[in-house]
Length: 406
Image (tube, rainbow, N blue to C red; front, side):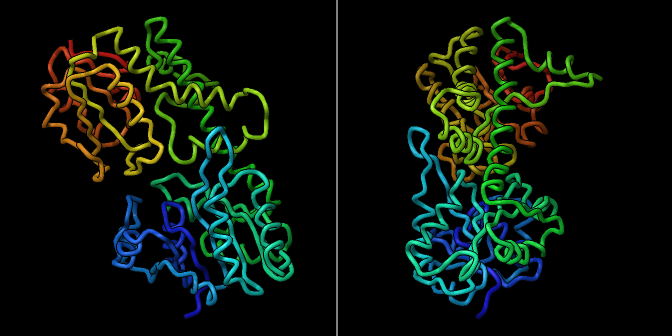
């Protein structure tokens, strides 16, 4: 069977893209090494939470396998494998290099390779040079290559894949046009840039959001030092004011924001705003624990942590800061730590709130799930009157991070 596109890496970036392309008329297949992923997708089940795709996957013709043989029957190869940061702020190319090494065995003239995952500056250049070194193909002549970054927010892929302008970074017009022919079934607004421009655009988006969080998180720490609360101050500052302070207080992590700053920082030898943002955002779990001790002891207390995913209404726990909070709490030797997240079914010790809230001394609300906002009054009413709430995201709408029922 001939395919219009094959998606290599059908995770949280690749699978929604493949399903959306199939929904819009392309013949698409996928390649992945995760056997559980393959089984679920081929049984028309979403392996993770992504709004709207539970219905889409049942309607479209999209299957995945672990075999690269399908590449011989495919025009466009879209790579969406992970691009982690190694130790000591070093770009880790192992996953994408492994894919390229397998891909090379099946490459033929006129194949079009599209890099989709977030990549560091000059990675497209590296892939181009590596392929030309290991094969007889010349990019732009025999085969084609582009970087087409995704800029969707997890949980909004179905909407944003068909809404956001698509940036295509290519060395030559033919590579651009071939990538455009893939994405034009999703969006009309397609912008041609160079590969380095596309790489920087994606990284600048994530780095800026990461720094915005760090600014407000830093202000929260300062406000706490003066025994006042950032939520109250922000509400007053931003009321009918034409130059508001943008951003929210909260845990800022995840597989993009927690690492992508390093893809820029690797290129400088000194501390900078990116490193400062990293330090501030990573400090927030310890800030919560340290500030809690101004109000009560943690030792021998029953503690609850509400929220374990890395972001609102997601089941994705990768690079979440909640586990870091739990580790800091463990250092204080509490009696029990109860963990709840209604979206994370794979979480060990995931306990229903009603099973522990009435015996909990400290409640940390560290992810702003809709369900926590909806049922906060029930949680609040069920808690003991002396229970300390630590509400980082202002889920309670009380404009306080630290408060008790009393």
